[in-house]
Image (tube, rainbow, N blue to C red; front, side):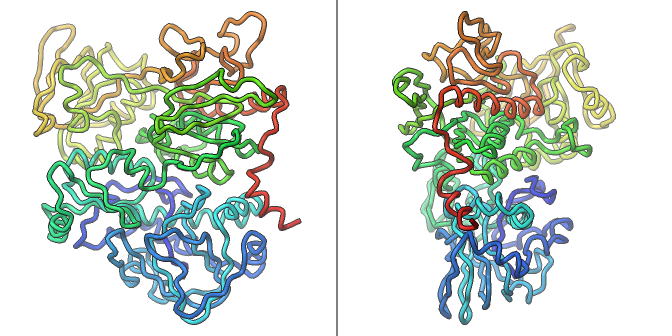
Amino acid sequence: MASEKEPERSAHDGAPSARPDAGLASSDAAPPPLSAALASRFQQMFPVLSPAEIDRVRRFGDVRRFRPGEILFRAGKPGPGMLVILSGRLAIVPRDGLGRALPVTEFAHLIGATIEDMSEVVAGEVLAEIGELSGKPSVSVIDAQAIGEVEAIVVPSEGIRALLVAEAELGERILRALILRRVALIEMGFGGPVFIGSLKSPEVTRLSGFLERTGIPFRVLDPDEDVDASTLLARFAAKPDELPIVVISDGTILKNPTKGDLARALGLVATNLRSEPYDVAIVGAGPAGLGTAVYGASEGLSILVLEALTFGGQAGASARIENYLGFPTGVSGQSLMARAFTQAQKFGAEFSLSTEVKRLDCTSERSGPDPVLVLDLADGQRVRARAVVVATGARYRRPEIPNLAQFEGRGVSYWASPVEARLCRNEEVALLGGGNSAGQAAVFLASHARQVRMLVRGPGLSNTMSRYLIDRIAGSSNIEVLCDTEVVGLLGTAAQGLRGVRWRNRRTGIEEEHAIAHFFLFTGADPVASWLDGCGIPLDEKGFVRTGADVGLTGRVPLPLETGVEGIFAVGDVRCGSVKRVGAAIGEGAAVVAQLHTFLARRGSNTGGARPAEAARFVARST
């Protein structure tokens, strides 16, 4: 059998889209069985390479021999990379951050395999984890020990990415296996952080939502339902304000961490950014930023993507997109964005998530033969790049509702993910907004909640929402649309969370109050461009970035997606005049790459070449 399990989040060829109850298994219950579609893909999850395929792998790694009893992988420790087994057998024991083993017999049952499948390693099997695509060693979630002598090809992280690019057909088989393994881990809630805290806690909701959107498996142990969790709380001597306790796979203990703390512990934040200039620094990892990263990295530019939260942007929070080209049955925003994230990493783009850019320095290093722009990060690091792509999108707008901030994360949400859907199962919810995001959320929530009330300030939906969503809402028996309606009050306390919503009909003045504990806001967004202050980049009256002819410069004519400052480009929702659609944002991300090449060619910049030097070293072995 192969042995590890780690990939993205859906049984749809790498699209992360976890089941509603994924990641929330309790410690004294078996992890939930995998979906039938995923279990049926066992052969794809654990492929056996042919002798010819093994020969094609050899040039990307080195053959090593392991003594009987030698440890190849240790749970909680960085692994050596990808192993392709040439001969011998391995004993495999999956473990969580608490050191507890998941019996191989149980794991085999969960993925629809036999014990023999899971305990025997045959020549050609692959041990790897999709986190290796980041270019850094990934923390193992298994113990793997040699039974007798074992011979294997060891391919380091940079060699894996080179293999995926150079060997397209073989790379597809390996990448699909890695993705499906991550899917399995997410559906099982195994292989990532373990939370110890109440499932209903706003803090657990906050952190688990972050991990769901980042495609990382996790499990929650609720002390109210689990004796083991209560014992663990006593062991860690946690105070109420220190919950939840988060145990990382390497054994690190965090007490009620911020999203940034959790991201750093999981290695999502880049801590060793290179000192030499990148060809392009992309700020923002929504559809436009990811589109730029995929096309730019695939065409040989050295790319760094900086994202203040997690990949996907607002599109990543869309429950289902049904008008995106090529997906006739629809696709969740997170599935689409996670595919793009994996694709960009495959081509060598570097990412640093939960990384805020505080300021763009346009002047201090603009002289000399290779002028660069400098980005000052919130953690004190500095990034140098020959060109910068502004793809920071827009931030959810907060309507003027009394006490709104008091209930954010405690009943008030700005997106509807599976985490929120679980919390409002069979309950009544309210949703404010009349655009496509609101419509997608209403349809998604209607499959979980008892009733969804859509509160719309305008007279109807026809001017703000796509027709297919309007028809879907009209055909849903448990969605009620209230037009000409505004919210005037939220009820509850900080301790209790939201307990009620009060709204008013703007035409009649009649007010209603309903016992609602889940309120979703989709009221538009404002551009995230304040970090550009001081660079002299022209903005429109609403704060969106002007580009191309819209800049109005005399003399120099900017490229179509270039701002008023040479070498700084803007794409996606942050750009003035952009079409606020996922497809349009991805298209702009692709289009700006050609303009980046034009700009860098004019500069005569010494760009990064076909791929980063360390990866090129592995490809050179074949020549």
